[in-house]
Length: 98
Image 1: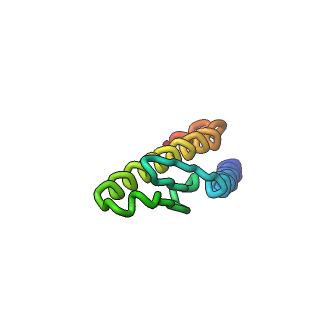
Image 2 (image 1 turned 30 degrees about the horizontal axis):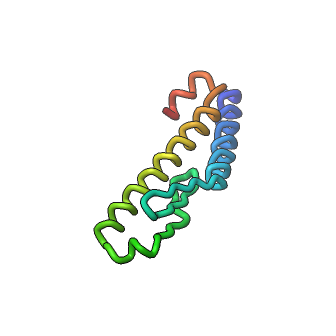
Image 3 (image 1 turned 120 degrees about the vertical axis):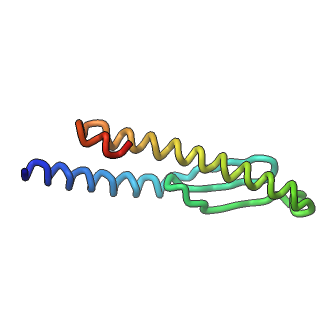
């Protein structure tokens, strides 16, 4: 029984470490004049917009949507890779995180 508790505590420690690592990652995506930065936990940290996009609202909305989605896709991939590393040695408990 105590073996399971120590394994759970170790898993929590690794999860906390993973979250800290994900927060430290910076993912940047630039598309059509919009640059979006986010971290590995999918939090947008910065958005920059080219001046020429400020004249065309529709173009700006499309570019912003595309850049944000692409940045979040990259962040999701980073998260999945980190989770795979975290769960690689947990044996049967690894299935709980997929």
